[in-house]
Image (cartoon, one colour):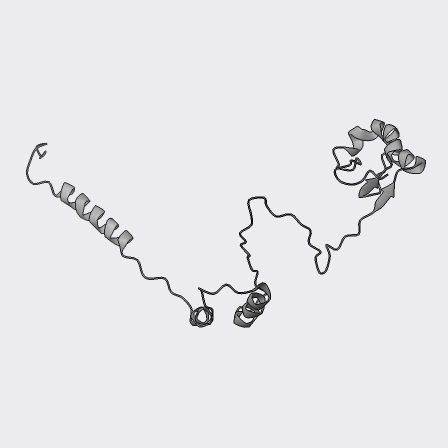
Length: 154
């Protein structure tokens, strides 16, 4: 027997409404986030309203560390509108030695052969005319001397 399209007994529609209500109830009922006891203990030792000096903050971080591995730390700084520029000397270096070459006839002959055995090329302004024909080789590799990088001496 076929049911009429407009009949009053339509349990299918009611079931759909109940299922939707259950799904929305599941989404809103969420357990509170669990925070570990070690984390809470270390958080209690830090005053959130106080601005710590850098040295004191680092020593406090080392004391409050509870992980079994070397943790990483992020530093967020507010700088002026001008910005912040500077250099940092890493305590253990990068593990790479920089090979510096000064432009002379022997180096030009090596470049002509395609042998580039240096990381930085330093030149005098008078030698730039000789280097011009190697610009297509050195330029894309970032090895062409230029005043901005300080590799053209006087």
